[in-house]
Structures are given as C-alpha cells and as structure tokens.
Image 1 (tube, rainbow, N blue to C red):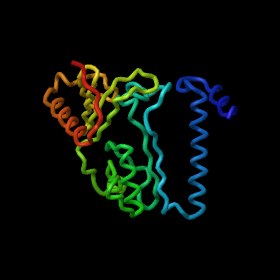
Image 2: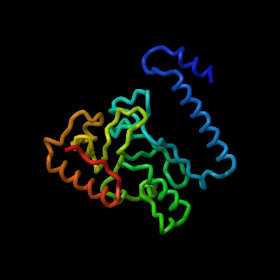
Image 3: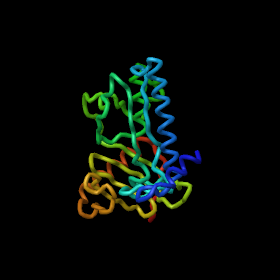
Image 4: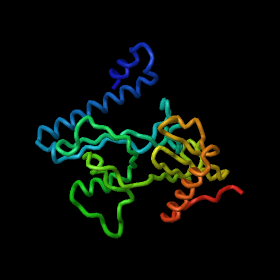
Amino acid sequence: PADLVAKYEARKGPGIENPTYAAMIEGMDTSIGKLLKAIKEQGLEKNTIVIFTSDNGPFAANVKPLREEKGHVYEGGIRVPMIVRWPGHVKAATRTATPVITMDLHATILEATHLKPDPSNTPDGISLLPLLRGESALAREAIYFHYPNYAFHKANRFASVIRSGDHKLLWFYDDDSVELYDLKKDIGESRNLAGMMPKKATQLHSQLKAWLKSCNASCPKTAD
C-alpha cells in the first residue's frame, strides 16, 4: 500500500534502505496477525501448527553479516528464519540454534498429525517434534545442500554443501575446490579453513560424496 511505503520513506536515519520492502514486511505482519486472531477466535489454537519460514535467501536486499544472496550456497543464500507456533506443544519464546532444513517439515507435519508416510515415498528429512517440544536433540550428524544449477542471475557456482555441527564445507564443481568454515566463529564465511584443517575438510568432503552417491544425485563433472 502506498501509505505504508510513504511511512517508511519519511523515516530518517539508518536502517531503512528499501521503503517498499519495509512496507511489505509490515503488511505481511498485519495479515499474519489477523490469521492468528481468527484461529484463536475459533478455538483452534491448540490444534493448529503455524510455521513461518522462507524457501531460500533474499535477492536485492542487505543480508549482512551473511555472505552472498539468493541462488548461492553461502549462508546469505540458504539461511532463513523459521518460527513455529503451536500452543500447548511448543513453548513460546524459546529458541534453538540447531540446524534444520525445509525437508524436515514433511516428516514433522506427518508425525504431528499422526499420519504415516507412504512406504514408497519416505520423507527426506526428519521430524522436528522432539526438538520443538524441548525433549531431545536431533539424531542427525549433518544436513546437505545440492545445487548444480545456475540461479536466474547466473552469478553462482555449481556446488554441494555439508553442514555438520558448526562446520560447513562447500564443494565447487567448476574447479573441484572445497571451502571450510566454522559458522560459530565466522558467520560471514570470510576465513576458509580448508588449508588449516585438511583432515576435517577431507572427512566432510568424503561424507558429502557418500551422501550424494546414496541419493543417486546428478552431479556435473569437475574440471580436469
């Protein structure tokens, strides 16, 4: 709405670089509020899971301190928010730094609704309910990303990624190189540790290759 855009155009000082985007966020926030209010008024709160998330990083926006943007496998392209609201099951105002991935939502919703997956099409992710309820950590060593394609801007490199604990390894196919980062200490992925931690890099690279093979993933040939 034009009035919301004007509201943010009139704001002075740092922080508002894109008034239209800011207006869209407020509009979305208002709409979500109306939805949650309607759910509550109908007495459906404890029987309704509301999940707010995004499919990938933004484009044409400031994502600092993260590196890169939509279409890249650096954190600016793959790290997104996720908020879960389920009164009586998920405690309000709790947070976790445990890495999860969008594919986990399939298994999570199936378990929450007491449905069993189709035996011929089992979920790729795992249920997040134990984590959301604060019962236990996830029984998973790593999460993976595989993107051997050009994004619409064609500025990205074909790559596969493994995230295990605080460490993240990126394998680029154009030159068969790897980059290793400690996201706890370096969320901006500015210090490549592959040369300083060769054993860790080799371990994660091997683990990533094994996962790709297990998935029968289509991979481009690396450069000679």
